[in-house]
Image (cartoon, rainbow, N blue to C red; front, top):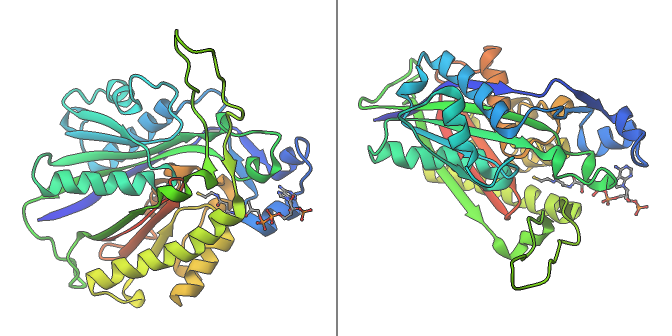
Length: 331
Ligand code: COA
């Protein structure tokens, strides 16, 4: 059996917000932001929504895979910033693209969301419950960001990416001898550190208790704790996935990491003793889009032809929860 990605797509808001634009909002500088994060600009919604971006990304992924929307079995949208609590974003996407036969639901694992959704789709496809899935990461974080907090507002952006995943009964072997498709996955969560990166929803409010609005309804982050977690946990879980698959770092062509901070990615590369050239990055122009960063990066690298058939990829996400994971697949 082969479970592989056969189409990718992405969608970004048109509005570009540069570091120089942020200099007008908070006490910061382009130099500080670039040096500490690698980010130069990000896309910010001027009306685009989590569902509209997700639907655009899905249409592109389906087009690449050569599939009609009514052939889709399962839609999984990873998001922590839906525009509606009910219905879920995946059902909105189902309606928007006309995927009339699909089962659709959301999943929230913050910046690990796309990876966890991909692994969930893998489980459904592997057991034969469904034969294909649209897996999406979509976020409009700009509405969750405190634009007066220079420690967080410089980091985040909006956007969506999607992958169409298909199962086929036969094993597909590439010219280089590698078996195509998903090979191995590792996932982890540490709820004890949940509050180092958090965002409140509504506080308890019903007919029987006084209204109790959250003190801070925006993203709240202990940047250094998140940094320490990422630089330690991400290389460890990638190594764990490689060990489980019986692979070495040199067997991997591309390490596609969640785009949170260039320094985190450089540190992971160093700890794994892997060439940084094998860690694609696009964070400088789109910032951290939480669950959307990995599928947007994958789509960019795929569309420009950088990923060749038979290449081995490690996808690795990490973020609020805390959550983390790594998946290995052959293109
Ligand atoms: N512009 C200028 N100065 C800033 C600033 C900004 N945007 N944000 C913070 N500072 C200041 C701080 O106030 C502090 O000043 P002080 O020394 O006078 O107190 C100084 O810069 C250093 O702050 P610190 O928080 O130690 O910076 P840092 O090197 O840890 O960088 C982050 C901050 C947020 C860039 C970094 O911690 C980080 O990237 N963490 C991971 C965050 C992340 O990836 N989150 C998402 C995970 S999915």
